[in-house]
Image (cartoon, rainbow, N blue to C red):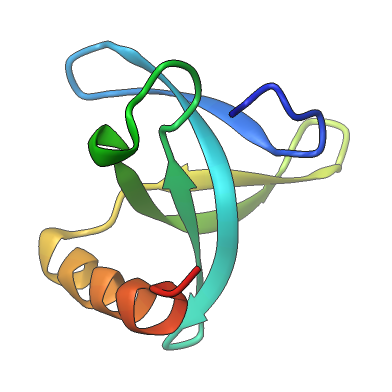
Length: 93
């Protein structure tokens, strides 16, 4: 699915050093903070094995002053709340 040029694809390194290729599904706000929903269905992943990740969007600037985004993991307790928000808001999509 990730061969569509219109999709935003990022690569992140997991805690065990594995490189994950993730698709940016959508951005959303919760309690005034911006978050992103990521999906790992890039490649040969069966639909029942697709994983979703929610990370905080941290704006920053590069050395040239260009705006960039960094995706930062969130605490487990907040993750539970964010998953509930995603499921109740975007569950039908």
